[in-house]
Image (cartoon, rainbow, N blue to C red; front, side, top):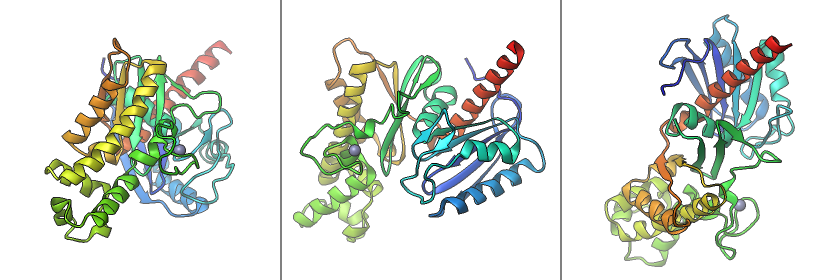
Length: 330
Ligand SMILES: [Zn+2]
């Protein structure tokens, strides 16, 4: 079923770790952005908030938004509408973002963390359309995710459901950003991939010929993207490194499937664009780690970096519908 158009003038805001995005929806099907603006994220919360307000006012051109959906790159208390903190930008500790935006724009506002809201975006407008249960996983600098069950975000008791990046799969593995060892994130993220490749190359000077050529012999410049390109070109060392990362992610996803048996898993983020070899390793590992009888589609994300913005539209739309419902009942 194609998505129905959201009401006109839903303002979607995405506070990412490295960029800020704001979009305004048009009111006609198919759903589209009337306008989309981006800016670079700075290291300070106050600056980012002001930049985002500037983007929003430029989009609105004097109009009043029907509702505002906000994605935030960090933990959020959804019920209270408060940002708990950001792991990238200082000054976001315990900020009442919903109330700030509500009084600024005099419109209903919902604030959700980026993993949960991107899951909703993919479910409503992207690769998760038409299925009743979805695990969304994003693999880039970190590994995050979210659940949509029966059309609703499943947040868990503390809003931390879907944090697949911190499933421990190798207890003696590398130390993770969370302090534990051997989390999926510490073995499958982009920075891990790049570091592994650089270490392996310096340990064995005659290995990874194609990988070295792609990095113009500058091993220090190798990124996860370079590793993926070399793996696609058949470089053995790059394939080992990329395969290990895909395997770690696949085991994490396998554990999640054993618990909740979703219909579909959608994988996004920069590392998910690593090519056919990566996807083959990932799918094979997942299949090897689920119970016989589990049928699951594992698909690449369809909305790319804009999944949180689309999720913000879906969440704001749901907020509008529930406020209309409660008005009718009241
Ligand atoms: Zn961790």
